[in-house]
Image (cartoon, rainbow, N blue to C red; front, side, top):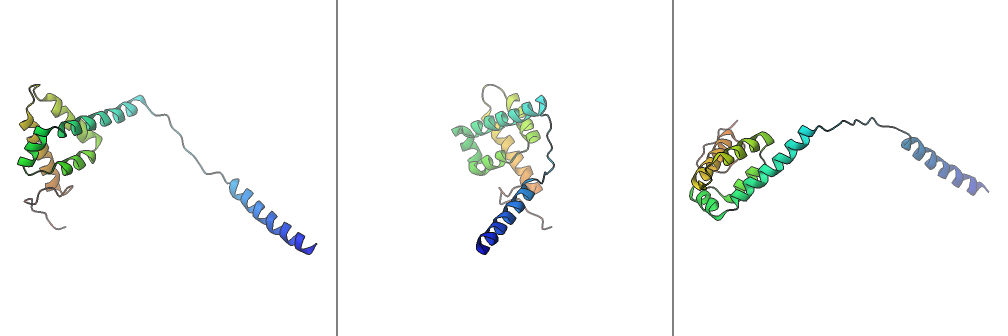
Length: 133
């Protein structure tokens, strides 16, 4: 009988603690998602896909390699771009002539990678001197 009471007390103590922990309510916040936010997110996905698609073309890859840029590093940098940078880059890509000025795209990507390398965001080019902070 004593054994049964001890077991009952132990089990009831565990159940009591479990119910006490389950009754604690943590604050939760919810907000409406605006149409503009959804469109901006989708546009970023589309822009990133278009840039990666352009980078997958053989002539663009050949030009990037001729300029000393590894296409894998360029893909990684495009994946790391913010939405504003993506929109700017995709906008410049859309402004190019329809005949396919591949050299212009390659030079533009080279310049973007060069600027990010100079600013210290990437480490793509070995000829860019890094400052020690």
